[in-house]
Length: 610
Image (cartoon, rainbow, N blue to C red; front, side, top):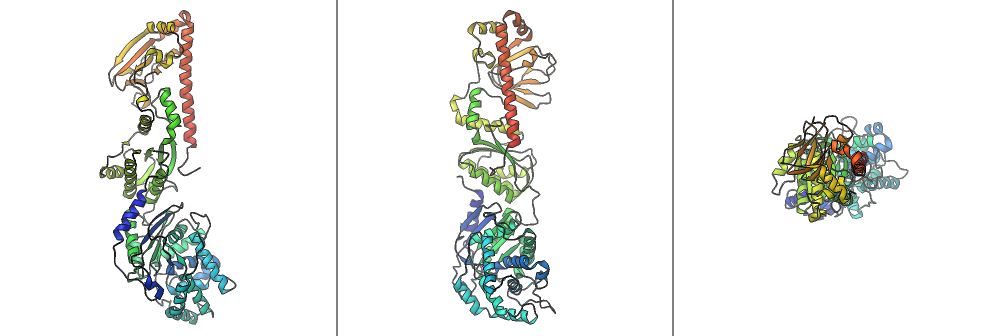
């Protein structure tokens, strides 16, 4: 399989930030002080379940404060918004994560992302016994992660033994009546939830579950109702990064949560979940490297949630191959047979909607995933809305991958998306072609495939009369009779072989070169190759020609006057009948092909569908 531009990007980013030495590992919980300051992993999970990973993404660490959004969501599900709002607010505190930040008078914590509010959230989880309540917490986290999670008992014991400040917060909450009498039981549940073991991959999938409206993108299991996901993401946006939340929202712009073991999770709603693991913390208690990596990715990939796409859920409108849909270039039987046999290797992918990072990532991944079987691709951008610089860069990365793998790629664009041309021109590699006309791109796709499949065996650009399709089945005597009636004519490139408005009194047999049939305004209807005929309607209808025929190069034709053709009815009815039969066979082939293409286009599918 060809490599992924997104994976390449993450590997470059990881290498760039691996040497960063800012921050210090948390030491107020003794087991956290033993963390490797050089441990560093990045994982990106899409809402359709694809993972990109680099670095230490499978190294286990404790979830710590990244647990807070998930317990808050569980409390909302168990108690309802109104009951939870009576106990904990949703306003930013502007204080550190472990501050004793309570509303004057009520003693209500400012929000569920600081320790005071998280302790209250833990108290609101339903269950008949303390063990049952924590079991529901662990089960919920596992549903978000898509696998069973467990507690690091050593970290839990240390949290329990050293959590004096949290005990002070708990008892102050009890003094205001926000907590009931079971303060120690609630604190024990809180210490346990912070001690759940995860890895970077788990956190990315947990974030992606929130991005996917509460449904796990791989297992399909629902972790939280969509309307409650909105509440959780709202509080994460304003409060998730503590007293650094304002700078985070302004500069990075994704709902997020950090943990003192070095994890950071971020959510781009509807698109992806992002996780970074790096233990050294900044002054706010957030992973120093994690924050900078998220900042860089948000800028590089345009992930700010206020830069939302207007796109459909899938950027791919449809795709089709040249076995089912062909260009307006009419081909001889040998080429049609080759396209029918190998045409699945050459496909057009039509895009739609706004193309930002998440939409184009899915497109690029799908194309690369098919590259073992589909090695000739045209990407059609005419139906796309906005194509931002990040999307253009990803598409240019795709062209680099195709070039390095000796695959074939082209684009169709009507000029509405100059970003792509600019990005391609900036690359060192030769740029793939960009066609303004989709039919010309389809013809290029066919030509590149036929050159590979047939090579030197491609039909010649000259045919003799006895090899012409209109003459199939004629014996030597009939061929000689027909030859005596024909006029030979030649044309230079660009010459008009047949004028629109001409009297329909001649039938043309193309013997050499290509001829394009066009409307008077220049729109191409078909390109004919040697062995084909045009002007056949003259035998049925003498109305003036509605189209013109233009020589695409040096052309040779044999011309049959319609009067001579009609005279064959009496002079040689067998010859005339064979010519008519061949005309009808050609017409039926074209009609049948057109019908099959219409059916194929109406039923064409999106990449990744079945």
